[in-house]
Image 1 (spheres, helix red, strand yellow):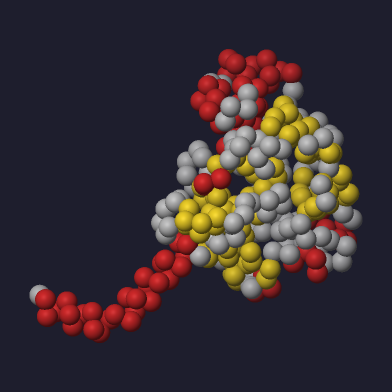
Image 2 (image 1 turned 180 degrees about the vertical axis):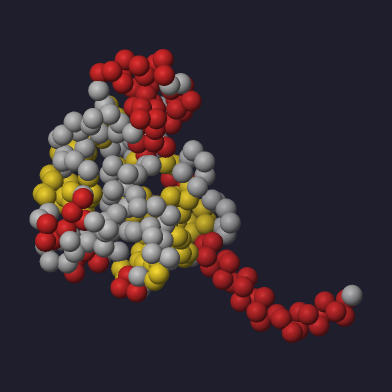
Length: 285
């Protein structure tokens, strides 16, 4: 047996070492993750394989959340991957608010630290340049806030009311839903936020939230596809330790609605592709 093992090692050691190095590299330095949903449209599509920089803010022991060294933290506007606190699945969303930020979300309009975001509607010609199926069925806005901008998708317009969020649904909420199971998701920011997360998770009524402050060590995440994203409005705050890295580029992409046909035009493209579209803006500030 010993001779067989030695022969196996001599014959295959190069390949085994290569695989070991690759696994360690993907765990601690960089990885590529599949995007399973359209929650980050129009910039990131379902079927994209995203390259993630795991050395953007710190160095961790492979296969753990133990930080060996750290030099920075996620900033507003960063697109990041993280384990969501509800079921541990890997998510990719945008950092909207960092620890200490005061956040308001009123009728699909974002306010951070008292500054209200501005929303400039994109014209039909500009919208057609986004890699989204049936762009005419969506509304695209340039959201600008605190010196950063990004393009977001909405079913309605900022400032409009949410048809799910009405007086009747609020009156029926205590009887029809058990909001205690969401109580921990507001992370000490207040029971009102926990009830709002409950309403959002069960009814999709996410256009308005009570004002809250992001606790220390926590982050508030949102998808750019604002009406179709299971983000912090459903899962609550995301712990800093759960954030793995910053999304950097699209390695390759396939179309799950077209027999997984490759989207060759998206291969090896940076996530700042919108800067190359006339009048559009970068995904990251």
